[in-house]
Each structure stands twice: as C-alpha cells, then as structure tokens.
Length: 244
Image (tube, rainbow, N blue to C red; front, side):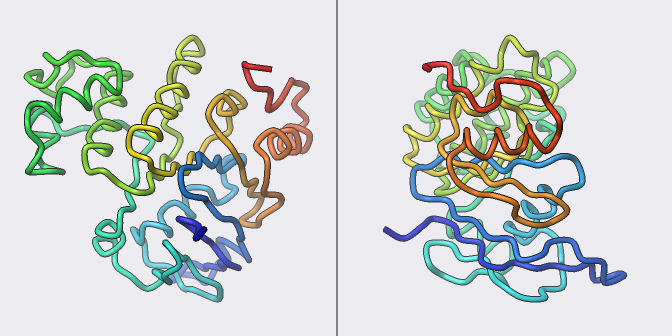
C-alpha cells in the first residue's frame, strides 16, 4: 500500500543566508495513521510542516516530498491543498466577527446545515455554535475546536497539526487525543501531529524524532518517545498508553 506521505532525504536551507534548516530527513505516514513528529523547540518541526505545505520558499538541497506516491516538492500550496493536504497552526482561528457557519463555508461552500452540525458534534460542540460569532466570548479551547472542525469539513486526506495541544489544560489532554482518533475514523484520513507531549501516545501509532533538523529515529510511538525523553533527561513513564 502506498504511503499517504513520504519524506525522502529532505534537506533544506534558508534562501536568505544559506543556513541549513533540515538535513536528510526521512519518514513516512501510512494511510489512516496518526504519526507524531517529536522534538524540542528549534529542532525543525515547524519548518518541516511549512515545507510540507509549501508555505515558505526554501532552497532544496536534495531529497523530496511525496504525496500518494507523487513528487510534490515543487508544487504550490494550493496544488497540495487540492490533493488533500491541510495544516492547522498553533494559534486557533482569529477571524473576528464571522459567524461559525460563515467560517466553515469559507473553506467548503457546499457545506450545508446537516454537515456543519455534524462537524461541530465531532469536535464536541453543540449545534447552536453555528450561529455564534468568533469573538472574545469564545474560550481558547472552543477556538481550537472550531479551527479543527473547519479543517475536517474540507475532508482532507492528510491533516498536519502544528502543536494543537499547546496551552491545553492537562485535564483535557485525554479528551483531545480521543478527538483526534474520532476525526481519523470519521474521515478515514491520516494525521501528522507535531507535539512534544507524552500524552500523544493515546492517539499516535508511530512517531519520528527530529534533532537539529535531522531524523534521529522513526518507528513505534512508545519507542521513539522513550528515546526522546532519555535524550531530554526527563524521568517519566514516556510513551505509555492509557490502555496498558
């Protein structure tokens, strides 16, 4: 079976000063997989996410990005989006004043009331949120849920999530990762989850560890998370699943 995403020996440098940003990064994401991208701040995780979506212009030194077996390394962002890729950012939606319904329909003009309410339910929000406005009355958690709902209403094949769990209260971690599993199953999609949290093991199947723009390890989530914790000097039960 063809992987939904393959990154092969990807090396990037800054077009401004030639600084190496990524060096021979290798990993793959299988269809229907939640794959966690691990690494401390400055390891290259967000750079990789932006490169995957074509959001910034980098100098390609070697390697490539393949989506469903096709080389997309030189494609524009809109071309990758049409293939079924999308990205959510660390900061939740900031389209102040729009109703949630209008926000959703900006991404999918064909989305009707039934589909809008279904997506709200999928992220744990009630149907009446469709009439709410995106403003200061929404909590940070509600904004994040709405951003995720606005992405899944586009029915992507691959969702890249750049630290969507940042600033979440520890009490809601389990609930959030259960939400990711529900999204994967509902859309039959893959998720590349950029994080540094052990709790991601609730949802993640496999993981890749980056350090200084290089792939250190890739494989079973618990194995890679334990290595990450070891290299970070963290004395924790890294990578354990709730079910075990």
